[in-house]
Image 1 (spheres, one colour):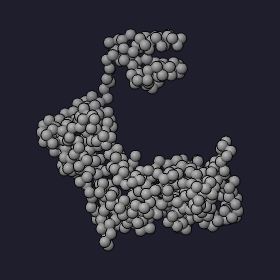
Image 2 (cartoon, helix red, strand yellow; image 1 turned 90 degrees about the vertical axis):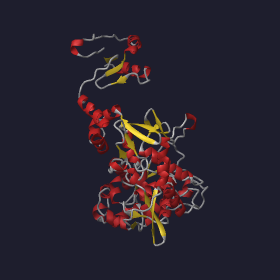
Image 3 (cartoon, one colour; image 1 turned 180 degrees about the vertical axis):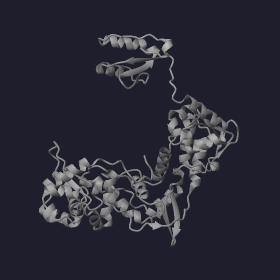
Image 4 (cartoon, helix red, strand yellow; image 1 turned 30 degrees about the vertical axis):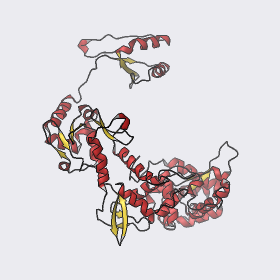
Length: 480
């Protein structure tokens, strides 16, 4: 999961164009075409033909004008479509309009939604839809329709909020809760007391539960803690909702600029469009935001007697003030200060160091294996640069890695074979799935010597012969 990031992975334009093409040729009436040309500023005489209109719609002509004619609710609906970033049926847009009988048929419930979307968004040339035909004959046409907000329009989409407040004030954080969580690292935990979000050390490596420590995983658990503080949980979804309130809030805050703050009431409409069936709608947005602040996820500041909120991003960035959290306390280790280190800095350190908790002090020493896995990136790391300058033990390990960089390492007890026959290669992969056999480029495989007998037997059983090349010490290599 990515936290407080605004861009989802984008699809290519091909699918958008295909749906737009089908819409123009099969779904639009003359009234629709005329409305789209008027909203986008197309000449009806030039773009009035469906085969030409499809190209005009996918261009950026008139987008600013078309977006300017939307209401706040429609803009938020387009943010939802951008967030989902794939063709969706009309029910996902139920936050715009829906039939009164929630137990009615699909058509009874969502015909008002379709009429609203067609009138307010499709006729402005900002959304496309088509019949996604299926072999399941009992589906109505409305159930088969799929809607897209073309990815080419994403960068032109206005922000979802009417009036985010620009304040350069750093705001107030409840960082204490984050610190208390990090201090768990210093307390040994038994296997039976280990929880999925427990911070702990295992063989010198930093973990969350039994998973490798990362900022994303750390934040995932903090967000879940925020969600679980309400009943029903903010992490759950209402019937048919594509997005949970937690995901909607996280996305809403990601759309704020670094100096922008938002009033809780501004989030109500956003949540109503993104997850209209959430059963906890009676919970006040001010309470939800305040709880986010209490959990160390949001910052707050007071303006005109009211609290405003935005994401607490500082601990999600690498802190370049290294002296504030790293201290060369000994020739044998560097001391790490959990009171001041950012979560992102802690993650980066965990990618290059062993940890040891000793009498309430967190000590770090170099981990040559992890440092050497990607030495090119390690060389450029600002934290490691500081450690090399300040700590002899880190400098010595790095110098050793530099000396060995680019040299060929020959492994003992390792055999190499070339398997050109695809069927035999597939049989080997199926027979040795435990990771002891590695499949390399150019049809080569590698495996330990103790697998030679089973490998040869399988090759012979499949009707192939084994050819070997003896080890030649003068050549400095070994092959099979």
